[in-house]
Each structure stands twice: as structure tokens, then as C-alpha cells.
Image 1 (cartoon, rainbow, N blue to C red):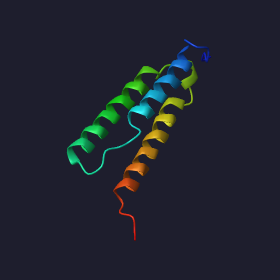
Image 2: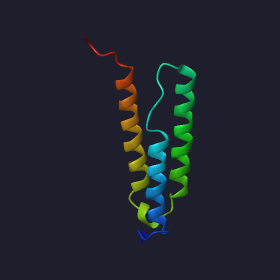
Image 3: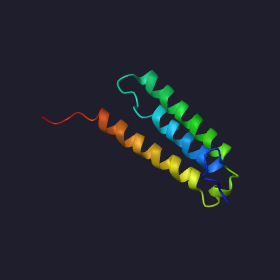
Image 4: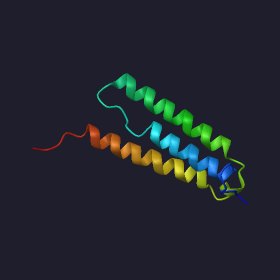
Length: 88
């Protein structure tokens, strides 16, 4: 079973997830090169987190991937919203 105690594996996952969310909180817009780098790094970092916790006891039902996907979908929505001109 996972360990939510400070220093436990599940606790570490939530800390890593928070840092992931914080790092990618503001997707760049209006700079194609920065956008590409942002999404490439996001994919690389999300893969690293999924791999790190793949065999964790608390991940038996895919919690890690589900949380990463939720964050990525939210970031995609923020990105699209930021690129959509506001109607006057």
C-alpha cells in the first residue's frame, strides 16, 4: 500500500506532481519556438514521472497517468484560450 507519510513514495509523487504543474503553469504563446520547446519538455517530464511511479503500490489503477493527463488537458485548454482573440 502507498505511504502518504512525509518521505513516503505516494507523498513524493504528489510533491512531484505539484512541481510539474507549477513548472508548466503558463504555456508560452506568440513564440512558435518557445511553444514547441514547452510541449516537448512537458512530454519528457510527464514520461519521467509516469516511469518513476509506474510500479508504485498506489498506482495500481493508473492514478499517476490520470493525474498527468488531467494537468496536460488543463494546460492545453489554457493555451487555446490564451491564443483565442477576445471578441470586442
